Image 1 (tube, protein in one colour):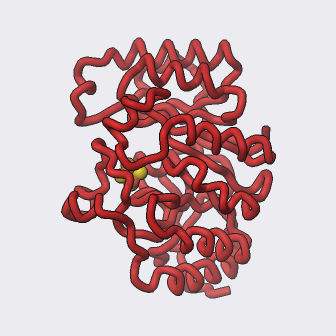
Image 2 (cartoon, helix red, strand yellow):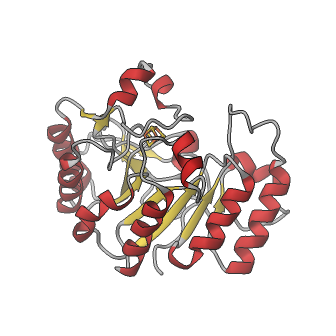
Length: 280
Ligand code: SF4
């Protein structure tokens, strides 16, 4: 073990309780996301630059200071990515760190182009005793890799904003349609893999409530957020949305986490765990 490797604690939030919220300080390819991204996963990696899903609300081009048209053209593997991943995964293993690594924040692991590096990434992580989770709008494209997912270790997640195809095509023109994303979640869940859904951004309150109603039987955890810097941001009653979502999740027995942006509306003393044990 390299004793010089410093350990960085995750986002300072006392709700992180999975025991794996640590990252190597000098690691860049497998890193600990900060701020809002940290609410999704203790560790993350981004194999590609760009994404062909073309979501109208995507904030990534501005974060990467990348031209939006270039970003939307499609994803390409980052130079040296797999070599860097192998090197860092080895160091994590040597340091005894086995957290779950999420793909991805700044691209989609099942974008419409060549995603063979996604499979290789999952294999490398597993070989080095790291967990993984894929967060995708690629729907059933992900089923190619379902054999790699381990029960109680890995997770499959999708972002959903609506059940309506036309709505989805307006906001996420290159992504899999909602029914295809639901089909993927259902399939992973039926194989015993932990599933979760990101309801962020919430573009339409009624749509998000309808998604939970439709899919609660095969989604193990809901991560609920709002919309920021979008037309509906100022005209939505987020307090009412938070309360309605909590009421619905409790009625359906749906495990959920209310993201920081909405936590000011939580009832006093409300238990709101950011990380939950992964089991059905
Ligand atoms: S799938 Fe994610 S990374 Fe890709 S365009 Fe949509 S929001 Fe951006």
